[in-house]
Length: 241
Image (cartoon, rainbow, N blue to C red):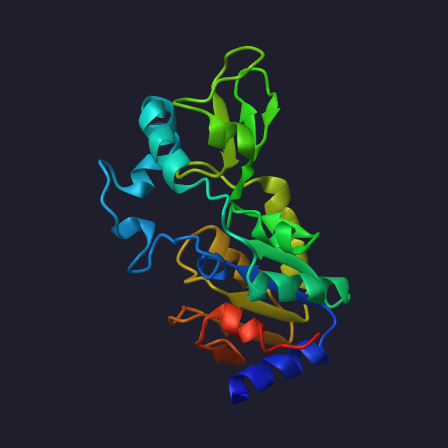
């Protein structure tokens, strides 16, 4: 066990009001690609850049092309929680971790057993008809061909994910701010902290300990009490609850 891992363990043992703020790097070890790594979606070839496709305007104007990309690249049902997801769930069950705040939309934290998960960017497991509001699950979207339509009114179904050009859910933001503001220890993991406004929520932390776990440097490293530059799954696999 490295000194960094020992430091993380000591912090987890010390504090009983811990919040975890995570991004795409938490799920890459489960086989879900991120957007900015060498092998991420931004570096693959499509008719349009992913950031264009995953925008509100593109969804409305080029719905068929949106769903061609979305169904092929965003609906991953083979990924399973990794050691980070599982250990965070165990820390919650032990009463130490109060919230998981995630930028991911893959539901892996819930699959691992976490209960208080605040999904800043929504979830591919929730979808709704924009005409009548009827809800649809993951399987319906995965099994749809072409543009998914509502069984009741034939309205267009939209994923409950935050597309570029859309605002974050106010209630989720409010609950995230409350959790971060009251935390003794904030662990930031698997995120470059490059996506705003989500990354700006870190500014609300006023607690005692700040830890960053990320393979690449982040803008918060200088403020952190501890920086662990290792894959987050490998890190949490060494932590005891």
